Image (cartoon, rainbow, N blue to C red):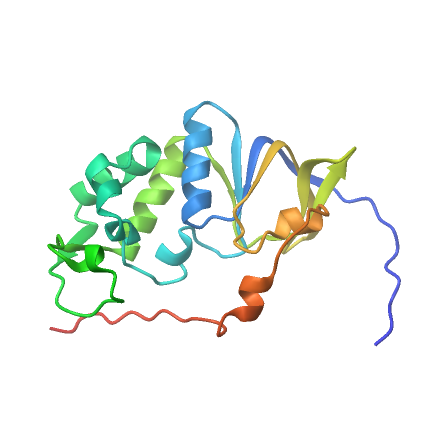
Length: 211
């Protein structure tokens, strides 16, 4: 298809932070909350306009930690445990009796406790509340477009915003994009077999207002 040479340009620095979390899904959300709770200036970048990943714009709802009874017995701890307790207290964690089905993993189905199902909207409200309380900066509708690498160290990312290409600098960058966008852009060895071997895109749906 050929190439078009893009003129060299100076990229304005949009923001500087201590910890930059690329991706505002489940892992990114709790990484940001833990980082900010320790007092680090924390910033989250995500291509969607809301946080939560599968529990947000992905429209998922099942709280998958129910699949590991030992983990559930130990308790989650940290920001995750505090978050889930707060979500439960405000009615955002519903429980339904397990009826049937399974994948022949006996421990998962025997003597099952009710399955926790997350209220997506309440999850997002609590997530935004916690992020604001800890002064986490949100750069939403912002796409990671490259890594800033100096002497083999990632010191931030290039992003695409509605105003054009910008740079976000950071002392520490945590890649929770789900596709290793920052790691790959920085030249790290990545493995895309999962993407190539899976059946393809999966879609969630939600049904409301039905008895």
